[in-house]
Length: 490
Ligand code: SF4
Image (cartoon, rainbow, N blue to C red):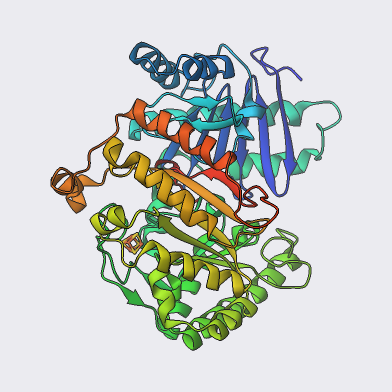
């Protein structure tokens, strides 16, 4: 279908989302008309509830392969990638290749601001992507452009002789009404409402960006790891039953029918397992009771149905972070009961198998104790997401970090479905004073290019890794990227 300016355009509705296809761009809006994401040539722009617009750019495969084959990432190439990414942030501008589907389907993960994207030809996997957060002015321009393009597409659909594809004329009119509510100013007001519901959602695992986050705790009970600044802005607190009920009230009011678009529940903040077992199970029960009732209500209005949060058996899947040192307060029986209550996936930072590096990072417990805790979780039935901090300690620690971590991973009883996340280290110096202690500890830092090559090295090492049991099978866990710079909750 041709738009008024001769641009190819079409719209359709899938899973309660409006998708407007305009030229080389796909714009996704949720059922309330808020922009969710846009996918254009070699890039995706995602919107968070906090109104951040995060652009992730993937240069062409050929350019990435060249950079790896050359063995180094040149500064000139990096700058040209960054310049292209910024130019292409405006829909329809700077687009010389069309590969929206490939970009949209790329695995989660990403990279440093202004870093060059790299594909490792050995493992055929994306290692790095360029990342850019749009400032307020650029974000407002992007919103106007996206909503303008979508509204023009709906006009075209409405004026089509047969009332358009998928929906009848009245339904297109209704979608146009929903979109019309959202100006850049209205979206900013919406983000302000979000901030009254949640303390900052500092970090989530990359496969939990679209979960329903419930803050059963605030902050981290330890809060002293040298590499981690996620929760330095708040005091640790476990929510009481009354506080949790109020939090649920507020987040349900904020999300409205969008609650049913969520597939899982993530128990934030940094370590839900620090909550005493009985209390944690009561919290899970409280949340499930509340969400089950809401999912049923949404279904009866025909907005979202119960296919989101509720699985086929009416259950809800819960997930959480856990720091390994907290497991000394949980028995295997505790863990089994927590699993039976519905908490099935645990994301945990092993960070490194090097005890020297762990000590420097002020990460509590030895690598051996961390491995033991992770194996206790496996015995309890949990699915694991183990996070490794690639590049921490710099070139001075690189070989020791990799060798000791591979050795630790070989001791973990991974099963199919487990995940290993390679998380490129991001220096939190201003908050934790990381750099000030670096030299004294005998460590240093990678350049961005060095970190890119280090990620390639880790991916290759993990791809070649064999488990030490009798039949020498490969590592059963899937290895993927986890860039904290790409985190967005929305
Ligand atoms: S890494 Fe985990 S334990 Fe360490 S400060 Fe951060 S949230 Fe707390």
